[in-house]
Image (cartoon, rainbow, N blue to C red):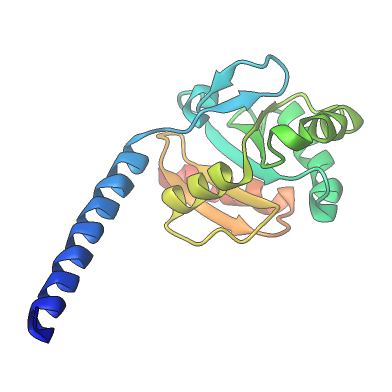
Length: 175
């Protein structure tokens, strides 16, 4: 076999792998990941927590995240106020099955009433990347979905509830 035949073979193999990877990516994008509800142990998708006509604020957290520890109480209060009756809060922890008890302890310590789902770190990160088109960075991360279910904002790091409330108020007027 001469060198040009080897190069053609390598190119063909590369193309086949690229086609297979792109097909796998399409399949992953089409599938909605299931996460376990920490209160009921049922498996749910993010869409299961969506309430028609309401904004949904998703807080992605981890039990050992210091910023999450500081901010989650404000999101609990926001949830109790009903986000001005315009929004719901959904928590997603990437603690996974190995740290489920620590996630439950975090929820109980903060007396979280909003729905919290748990997933494996790679599944949560994959969901974030597919949803936002951005690389996963870490916790906390926030996603804000409009009343129509469309992703309206994303933020990595601390976000004061007041900023979320102002964002919702401003964008509700334009919807």
